[in-house]
Image 1 (cartoon, helix red, strand yellow):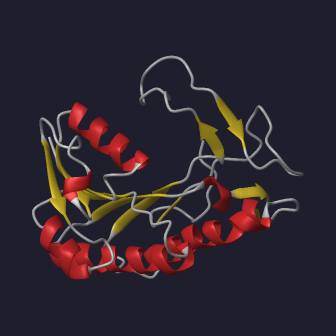
Image 2: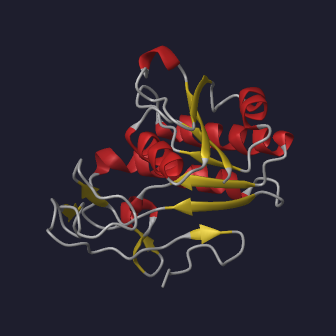
Length: 210
């Protein structure tokens, strides 16, 4: 059993992370900006606390005593190119102060490669209105690369697919409805077209996963 702190726990990815970790018997600290807005987030093995992932002080205070952290935080009321790298840098600094050495960052598939050396958001036909959002996620990865080398981090960036609200939990059988977006031209296709890629300090960034 581990102590895991989840930042951005009130969002879709955050809630799924909290539920999965708690369901596996881990003790989870769910961090949101305003706990009053998430009265249903708590439960067995889950403690809900207020915190701001852009504050290294908050991160250090909340993360102390935990074994690992997960960051799913996102704000749509400000540019992702501002929020995501700043939040990731503060997260890395705060975790260092707290002595937490392991962190998982939830990424986005549009920062993966659609062809060797070509990221999805740089591919022809990628919707211009979504590019800045993707660049924010890419900047967050760069913030991790610039962090203290003692921090053991991994970015989970699935292919750019849209899963339905009833997507099954990891380890279960069956598959959720999905579509890959965008295609190499425009719109969406019924099957994924992009390759899985991931990055950690222990392997060459961008190594294709098996």
